[in-house]
Image (cartoon, rainbow, N blue to C red):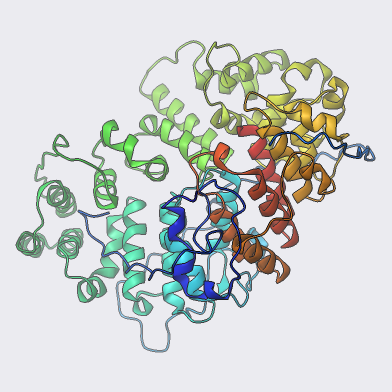
Length: 600
């Protein structure tokens, strides 16, 4: 039965009436209404939220014909981190101007974005002739973050790409929907950059609210200043007088800032929200006014509280950060006023989401190490950063020992090692391909794939095949290598089943079929009904056939609205990888498939 959350998505867009009713692919709860529930009724899309500080089968033994591919010598590409955050390649954007832009000189809003096909963006027609309200409703109701790091990386690129606004929607409102989704994904910097890609004079109320959220999620209350006039015109809320007061203080007008805070009180500003604004006012005016922040009576964090506290260097209590979810962890990971050592757990969370690349994660740990060293703090023997240094700079034998320690292979309970696999990708890429490492090849290949180093991973093919069997490394190469260089057959697929029964084997078969590396019979042999369709699969197929990569990526995320990979049905992985491949995003499809097998 579909979950209530997932049932809130598709029919509300109004275009879904054109999609034929069909049966659900499964009962996993990952799809919206109209994508599997023919009886669901349309709902009107919710109004744009007012920016406010106080709100926020069993195995089928049918034999599968073995595939015995050619085994050319793998070509090792230059070591790069393909998951490197797109933003790291771009110069910082200029801040929005605080002055009026003469009429007719504002930037156009019909084509907006900050990356393009030359720096990993999607083509300008990535959303084709899809309906704007349809796309915006999917974005507004998508439950983000999603469980897949690589699906999120791909979705971020789609949202930030310089694309043409679709039909039937105000272009600024389409940008606003993209910005808000980026914020919910934890992509604070990307959201702010996209919001600044159009001029404030062109902002709609929805765009004002989106830019408000992006500024606070990126710990930048000064980013609210260009929005004050439009915010006050659009929303009767104490957030805007408080924002006005903070900006007045930053402009050297403490008297006006005090009067504006009084206005905010009259409008209902109270408690922690007002205190945080007063703290920013005190810092901005240079008065040295002391404001004590007490979190004891605060029940939860929202974007206002996070943004002002992190900007002012106020410590956020763990009891509030934990329940706030992964997106706020990702915001915290890049908050510049928070000490680097206090951001390491958040950096791991950000990397797992896809907000941080392996290089960014490594840099976060290195910065914390440097700051501790500068403070004269001795690094504990066997510490993570010490092992990381050995993994990069030690003797060959010492490197593997260090990597094993980072992955937790020397611990009885290693926990979730996925962030550690991301962290070590650069060091693993420096290892020579050597049979002496055969016992660690699963972790080696998995680590390389977390950073998208598919060529480097393929170089380990002979070591992996020399071990035989249905190892993790074999499965990862089967779905993730640039071309199929390992032997695949039904018995090896069935042998890949692990503690979760046949789920891993079914996911492997689904990915191989979706990627076109085996006939659909491989998936059918594992009990996957690849022929069964519903409105979601039909929408994916239509978008892929039309070459609408952006729409395909968004719909792929719609099919992954669950807490973790165990909730993603194999049928969904089949349709997602198939649609991405057909839309020209085969590399991304392979990385998503490899991630699925790594994290199950």
